[in-house]
Length: 302
Image (cartoon, rainbow, N blue to C red; front, top):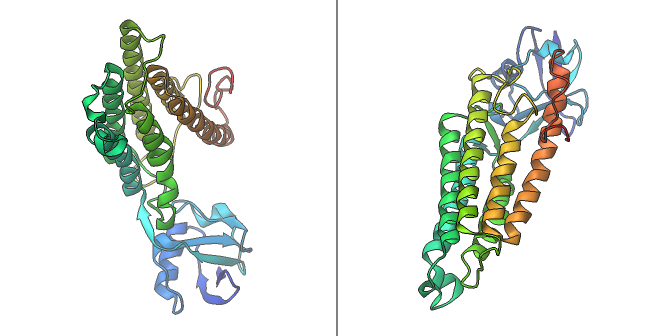
């Protein structure tokens, strides 16, 4: 079947002869071979069907037949611009808090004024520092060896937006007040409470890792295929990884007692709840036998 490819302004770029057995990736490769005007690399091509804001062809692994493309249809092509790999995006995102916390930890005189470094850091400040380092080093290792990405790249222009959450909302705001010379310990925080919170923080981190490993095993490399996750909290919620991640930051907020930690925890939960509800809906739509008793992120509640 023959279809027309136009740019977003309506200018025809090329006519392509497609086979229904072709995938979106095959379409992109064919366009790149045959386009004489505006050749665009694979990762920068973004298609919509019959309208500029029509149905997006946003899964490279799906066959064109799943989008009900017919002879004579028009595909509108958008150039997504310079791209950066998702793996590199995550590595940059997670390195930010590590680097920023190291600066707060080692350069207190420069940040807070002369004499600040002479004030000894409390147990909570030291432990809070190493808890964050442990969390984000774990994230870096998961990015390198665990995570499988449904998309290989994203627009480079979005990198700053992606980094804002961890670099500013967490690292700068939480780190500044945690290492401040006038930082005061929470009144409820005895040493026994602190040790319990550290154990809980570590347990929640471990459960979060096990969830990520479970999700990895459900997806074949280079595909968007997935199955129904089981165990490690998935029996109760669709996004157990987000559930444990929320508890990680809640336990950290209680441990440090800073208002900015609670603010980061609340903002993170809001964002993860939004992602979880959408993913929960996709699971129910994709799997007819999906467990009906599961909620999205909070057991029995949400």
